[in-house]
Length: 407
Ligand SMILES: Cc1ncc(COP(=O)(O)O)c(C=O)c1O
Image 1 (cartoon, rainbow, N blue to C red):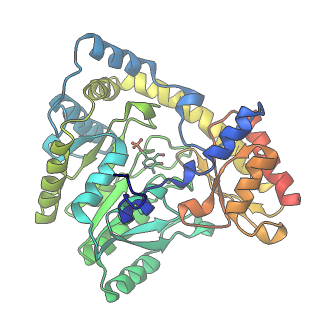
Image 2: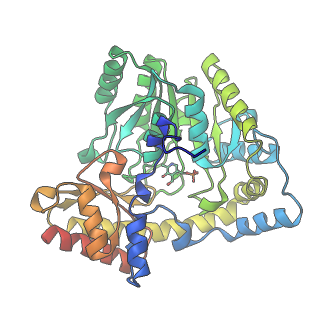
Image 3: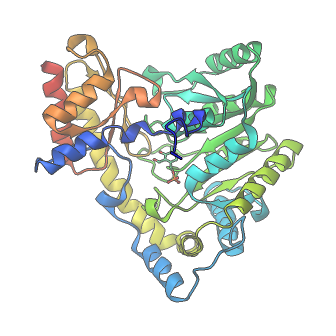
């Protein structure tokens, strides 16, 4: 008996993450002892650390023997603290029984898609998008419908484009289930205005779609504008909010987050049932991480101190990088309003490279600069750089891009 090479299910062709594609080459370069200037992965922890008070809470939970399973939808106290957070930040009254603890937004996303999507169904995603949306939708047989964001207008969504894409997909027989917003956005660093979100909600309502908002960066706001949570503008309209500790607390490795499905319509009730059942299948979310999460949400002062430090550093780095990138001939970059990413457009016609994939590979090989290709986020002719490394490293990243643009 042999384990056959065709063992993997066909859907596995969609199980990948473009951000990780250049890892083997980067490892090879590192092994040869050469330093890499890394602006590839959106993990704040290596650069800015984790809020100390939640590390303490996590360790204490383990010392206190809190290492068993917890209830599948989530620890009661954790869910209550999540509900209070939404009252505090957005003046929303959320019943904690509408909240699920998840292993990050990643698991919330899987629960959502697994519950609603199968062959013949689909969802609308704004382009450029966070790559796991596309992979997960396709993994479950779904169709991804892309609505174009307007780069020149700071990556704003367009109501007309959204309506047009939905009509076209429906005409083609796709049974659409939801519209997914990322606010603030990875990869663009943009933030939706209240009006943008009201438009999305109106279109969703007119088309009987759920609105889903991935708000994992909702406290990493780099400008004076106010962040709007989808819950503020979607009252009475089916919606789902996804968030977690990964970014706002610098706790990516804790793997803890939440999904909120607050409304009382039949679809929301069914979705809660689906997500609840899926949550039982993985028994529970990490118990010590949820206990750390209680402290993360309760100790508002410590959180705000940490957040001020994070945002100050990220703002300085993002502003430096945007200015520096715009100095390069053939490169233009919008201002980041939130999160910690820049998504510059590169005019490849000035270079010898046929696409952004080739450009990024050569950038790593020749300049030892590691960024991600825009096409991994659905939009070629762009690069995604994080604004996490110190300015000296970002300067090397920008210099590498400049050298390659000139070559
Ligand atoms: C937009 C977006 N959503 C979700 C995630 C993953 O979140 P989590 O760590 O909570 O699974 C990321 C990580 O980079 C992200 O950029």
